[in-house]
Image 1 (tube, one colour):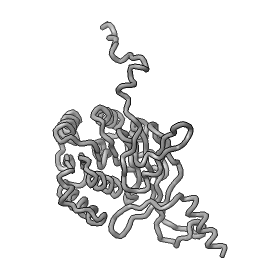
Image 2 (tube, helix red, strand yellow; image 1 turned 135 degrees about the vertical axis):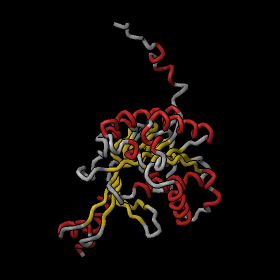
Image 3 (spheres, helix red, strand yellow; image 1 turned 90 degrees about the horizontal axis):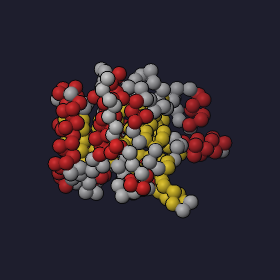
Image 4 (cartoon, one colour; image 1 turned 90 degrees about the vertical axis):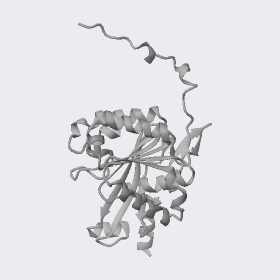
Length: 289
């Protein structure tokens, strides 16, 4: 039997890590999500002003809950600030993604011609080799990151890389996660839910593999009002849609764990409005008048 190999380079004193440990900073999303992450300094909470820099976050939700809307909006916002964005699409072909991003920019009042050069697209939707051959995908992503000097990475969706082989989800996500961490990318990975999965949980296709590996999960929910009880509770009519956003966990910094009410505007932008508990209290007070 072959003698086990000792990996001495993996053994370090904690003090050896101080020079390579990144500072806890925020990367602005341009939404109220920026208010929901914080760090504690000298016993006081201090807002990060964005998602944690260098973090790989999972964006989970049922169809039409606002996942793609959110990540596209963040990409446009960060490009307008001068960041270089890498957008991996496994679902919408690049030409259609271009149209969607251009429309988002116009809705946000941003001149698309000034930021389209800040965005790099890897189209895995039309390239089966990239979806099926993970080493080729990883090599392509590494090339794109290094050659285009990107700092923000969007994958929409990570589920598209294992949609018919969920048993491999953990391995696929781990290797992509490791690459993104090594290259110091701040990343948002969109995950699709199966119809049998509860909409309020971080679980998605592939089980909890993604949530266990990544640095944090943001859950988007879409609830259709169907009962009189829900009408009274939320102050909404049957048939209306209540959308919420919740940070399920983040290992890099503190976060607000409460569900927040969100809405998608007619222009196709996502707005984070207020904590759900405050929304319900306000509706109850209005109902008592």
